[in-house]
Image (tube, rainbow, N blue to C red; front, side, top):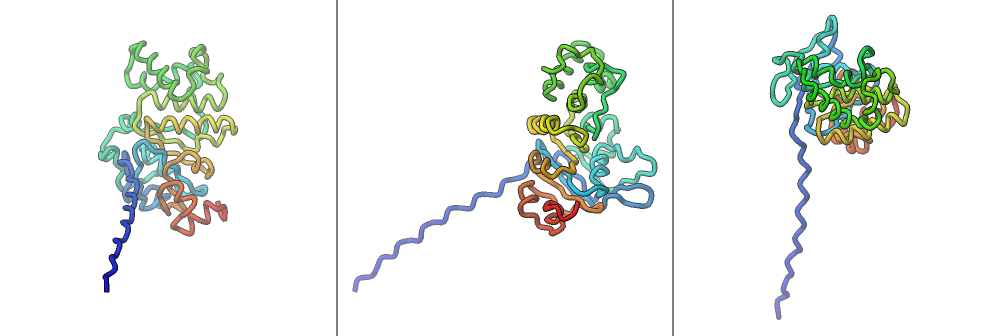
Length: 271
């Protein structure tokens, strides 16, 4: 009786390797911060990945703004503020840095546009460089144009740089504030609800700008707008009552969260 030749089983294709996260340009470890005897955030461990947009979401009062204000040491300037734990920037403890030096590397844009009212459009952009001792007019002019181009504002204001910054619309003022932060060439840009005071058209311009800027700078954005977080961010952190509940790729946070509290928040069961 002839033996039957067995065909070898087909080889299964190798599983695609999981995409590796980029290096962390900043990292918080066991971070606690608050006011007086209370902690607004507790035991936060969160990497901020290079050239990515990280969104911080959560209901009001959960500690989002406290967290990002710790990243450039603005939190500690408030009366009664406390902060303990570790935050590093490119591996270096930020609490060992002069706050002025740190804020050149970790810029911030606030909820409402805050151009300096006594300065022109051009002077606003150059303000940080001027405060740091740059006096060369050619260097300042180049920095103003570069930063306004990065903020997608140059074509709108190039012929009126000497006009007051307050002559701009709200959306333009917010992009001007972004340009001002970019002028000192930071590694990280923090944005605390940057679109909450803007109309939908201005908001869309800011979101388009952020997607372009992340090619050059790491971005952290606090937002109450979950649709905005889903549109622009690469990774999302969900905070609740001072705790970091969940952190991961934005798609996973919004479509397949691991924690039921995250699921409840992103589906609108509370907020």
